Length: 208
Image 1: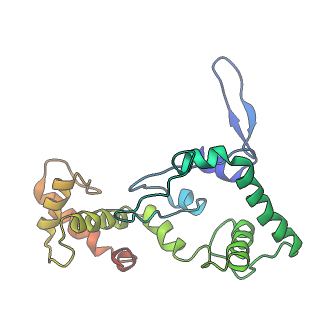
Image 2 (image 1 turned 120 degrees about the horizontal axis):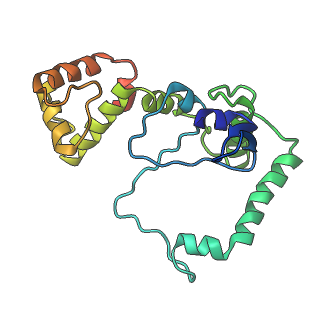
């Protein structure tokens, strides 16, 4: 249902004691946040994945209204004008698109937004690294490796050597679920870790 919501102008919906009705999806956006989301390939292909990089010791600027959110709420008309100014500039430039950008299933959206961030803001291409992020969230093995890396970083052991059993212990310590593991079977857990790590496609990208 959610995957259909992403790509259809209308979806079928029901409320109790009534028949199905069509509900428009055009006036809404779907946002979700997660520290280790797992999706289907179709879900990932219909998503725009944003990575939030944590900055140690960073503090957001304080404003007369309070924090950043309070400041934006108090100055909503100004920030909306900023958005409209960007759209006006894009329209004035002839609605450019980066026609070579095909790294997303929503091609027209990707080409338009890429042109805006590259041409108007001189920023990096919108979808650099996006395919690898899509692959990771839709691949349990890559998600598992990512979780192991974060756990090893937390323990300051990124340069250490690990056996499959060490990875099982690391998973237990940090509450990381091993995909395909039979609960309570430690021998199976070590074997399953070996199977997951043998699926090398994309793992180098995760490690980087």
